Length: 159
Image (cartoon, rainbow, N blue to C red; front, side):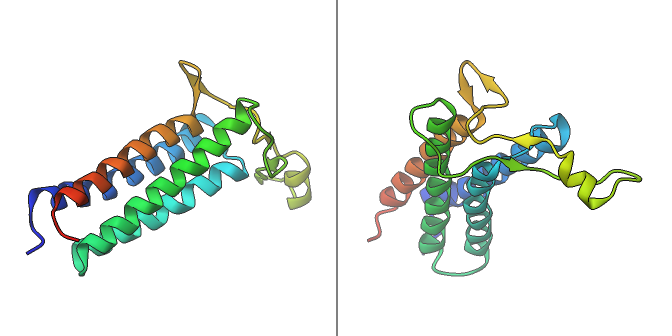
């Protein structure tokens, strides 16, 4: 039976961590006007998939496979975050240019919104804490979580 403690912990982690990281991303975007660049969006997509796999693991079997897929999504987002952080820190060049976020205001045409959109650069960290950017934090949290979950699944004792 797949109801042991390690499996339940892994299941909760693969739901909670990407959901919290996505909530933080949206809070920073809508609460603090830290608009995402293209590479920021790339980091969100695997977290969306991870949340979906995690929710499925509560409803369907095989739970271990769904949890592992969710952990893989979290790890994928973390690796994209590592690459993005490297671009921000100038360790290497990114594969994209800048992304603009058009915002239409009252009395503003779509063309005006595009022309006046703030430019969000992928190679500049808009916010850091202790020298670590949001992409860097995504890498650290996502990599640690996914490795911990894979370890919990290994401890579960099933092949």
